[in-house]
Image (cartoon, rainbow, N blue to C red; front, side, top):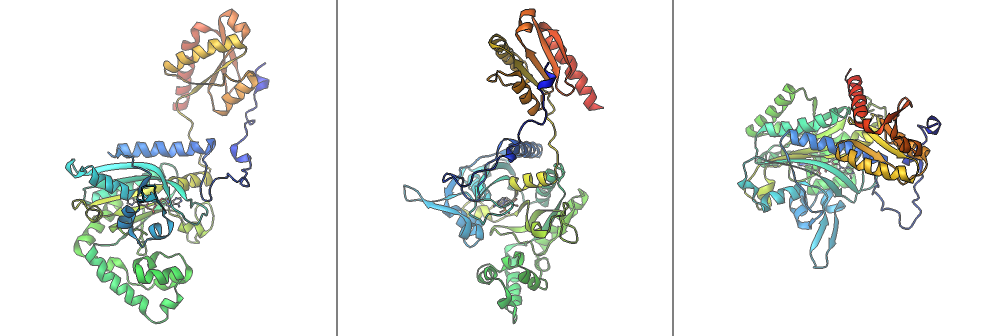
Length: 463
Ligand code: HAM
């Protein structure tokens, strides 16, 4: 009787529903709703982020969405794209200049200083998960609100700290079956960079070069010549090929630090690509900088064969910032960290059709027919929930067909079904949702029967 009611493919995926963007109340450009099915991917990433951060000894921290605009001008950098072009700024009712946070690191450095964390045992390792806002040109993988998983280590100058962060980032992707490569470079210390920038400027001043640069790079040449190196315009890429490389300008300390990071990565078998053009678009970095990119083959295709536009997409990035805390008014404190964008990772998982692992704990669905049975099942639901079962229900539905469809949709392993007849007999139907077979059992035996079935199930999945 119940078998007929089941149609495993009946539930409509949210993606099948066409969004109505014509409404005057449609969401803002570049912003995204995460609907139910998609949220499962976010949950997976959030769980992985929490697990990894805790295993490596990081503590969770949260900071406000709003900060003073000055915080970012001072740390991220006034002339960076993030602050000069993309930051959401407004003046609040008290006349203060406020920004919607465009990145997490400045708030975390501020919190470190404001809460006197230099008095805690060092290093202070913190992690953060939350939304960030950048008024960027929306395109694939680029949103005006995105979510980052961010890890920071304050008070540790050792190359082990840089390596550990890169390792965590690498593990994060590998364990999600996404093949990535670590792009890595060293920006040296402040002193090293001064001499390098002089040489780089001289190089770009050579005849005929500046006129070929894109407009952004012409501006960068005057304000921040390092950024000429990571422009994505083909003409600018062609010119930079012969540019001097910063690794040749590293002082002894920065060079030793960089070599140690690379040696540790070799030891840990984390594949990396030395990328002399990687400079990152934020002002606070020194020494190690890194970005995580999807693996790209020689033709510029990624593993899915999608062409190289994606070459530019960075799944995550970070580096060392030994002067940031002091620059923001704190005691001199070395630091390093990274941020990974969850939206881009979800996109990758979907592109690769990586299946979401089924929940280890089997779901037991409670279904009912008739008002009396419903009352009894509502009580039973609470008892089972308190007893530690992962129970689910759809008690507002009257039709058994609709309830069992819901059980299928959420991937229930077993359903317990109570109808009028069973209610009178003191029995209940237990249905295996995969095979469709069902058995009538004494209500008192529900626990022992479930225990037996779940144990059998565990043995099968362990084989
Ligand atoms: P970021 O490179 O600006 O670094 O951003 C880190 C990651 O956030 C990017 O690699 C990307 O995955 C994601 N992301 C950035 N912008 C967007 C966007 N518009 N849409 C979607 N995803 C985006 C930082 O924010 C630094 N605070 C990272 C850091 C932490 N460095 C040291 N500690």
